[in-house]
Image (cartoon, rainbow, N blue to C red; front, top):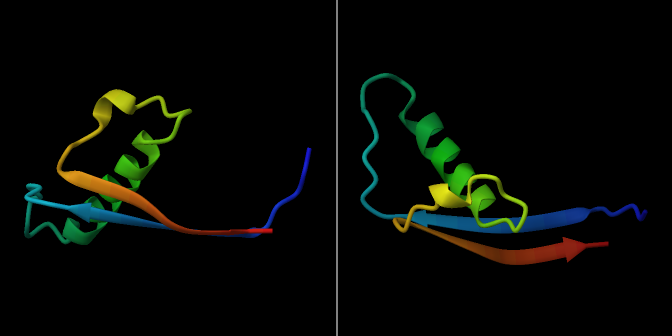
Length: 65
C-alpha cells in the first residue's frame, strides 16, 4: 500500500438539464447531479447506467505526490 497526497481538478459541463426552481435547493441539486455524473465515469462505479449525455465530465488536472 502507498500513501498519496494531491489534488484532482474535474470539470463538469451540463446542457439543458431540468431542475425545479423555488425550493432553495437548485444549487445543491445541480452540484449533486454534477458529482454524480463525475462518479458515473469511474471504472468502479455502480451507477454506470446513470450516465447522462447532457453532462460532459473532464479530468483537467492531476497533481498527485
